[in-house]
Length: 588
Ligand code: ADP
Ligand code: MG
Image (cartoon, rainbow, N blue to C red; front, side):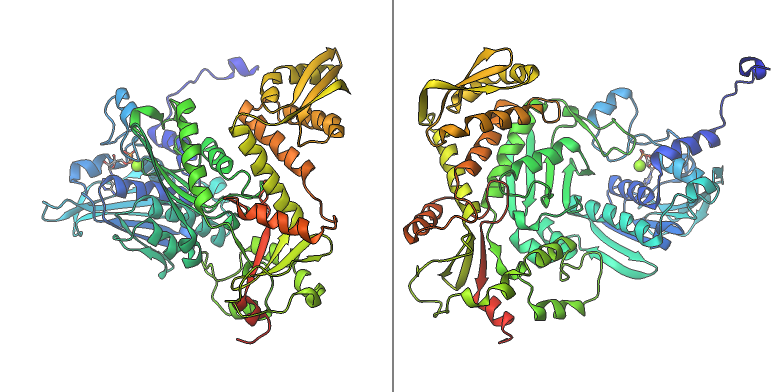
């Protein structure tokens, strides 16, 4: 029998099965339960939220709030799908001011766990409770309860073994719950959070703590002290928050947080915007650390893209991004970009002392994994050339003293309070880069015209790709004309560039254009070209510098606003303070 005729039994799925299917979208793991329950508590106006977890949230997630509570009629509907007090008309979807709105979460959770709600409104004499055991809904019964709501979710996926099998180790699930909770605690200044696991306190933030105080509590005072505030407004759109200096950047995005109208979200476009704001200050493979709140009128954003609401769609991206980028970039530029020697050079005592500390997910006392990489990477620095460090004179001695070139690559000299080591190529790159940018900004870059153009052979498609950008390139002092189907003629280059750089520069440009399929905008293209010109024009590691040259380089850098990183975000200088040295020599 063929499949088509086999069964004519089309049935409408029972509510229970429907909820279990929907649960697949809303409830993936304990962390999703935590998120939904805490968001409900926030929507209910909670000032204090207590979260208790067991076995990474798999055995128990209990969220207790002091919000408005629920009456018996509310409780009867709380576990029913598409029952919500927050959205009545489809039109409301455009004006969502609450975190939840679909009325799906509790129904989904109740269908795949043993759930119970206990709630009391302020005006009621006693509370009420209701249970939902894997979709088997109980009745509302009177119960003693404090004002507010407690939702208890036990044995997640007890009735869906296939889903349960996908859960990870306790530590992993706990980690994800805590990540969600941290984000919520940072997003909701004004609400206190207490979080425990297996009855042990994991973290708490008091209601009065502002964002900076919360970051300090969660991630330590070193980061908190280095953060720079961002505050900007464009019409009804407001951006506020904190950005960290580039040296705090990490391999992951765990400390990169965006909150949209109080809702933590991971949005690719916003992350890209942040990375863009750090361009030139940050290693491009590393993720900046920032805590940012964006507030936009609800109708300017569509949060209904995905049930878990972590992605959104902005209505007016073309205005939003330049605004965000400008505000963020200005704040990033205000951070302290100096690379302290103590974070780079391994001091045996420092590491040893840290080892005894307990390791909690937010202990910043321990070196972060990416710091360890750095430490290992530069471990050679101190032991290899101890003899070349200049003798120290008292910190108040008049600077600057002589410059010592080490390995034709590093410049070492005394500075106030210690010494610094400069990477000559990185620093020169920064100087050249800033000079080229300044030239561009002033509208004129000195151009060297060639009597005989330099011809460069390219693929047909490459010539085609280049064609669209000839005008932006001309603005940069790079005048290129089409010469044949596979040839371009370079008529002029910025005077800063050697003539022989032309073929390489053109090929590099073409490679940039080919990258990732999408053509970069003119601004981005300029950035790329300026980067590569800066690199080409700069002294290299291995170039022996005359004392005057070294002097001139350091003097030129001293006049810049930003000279702590090269245009690719590598540090240009490392400082060793006297106390770093004292520690290294066990004088302290
Ligand atoms: P949604 O949040 O999308 O409305 P939920 O399934 O999460 O859907 O919750 C259903 C309804 O239950 C909410 O609209 C709200 O009225 C009520 N509710 C849930 N949690 C709480 C709480 N902690 N305090 C008060 N009311 C709550
Ligand atoms: Mg909800």
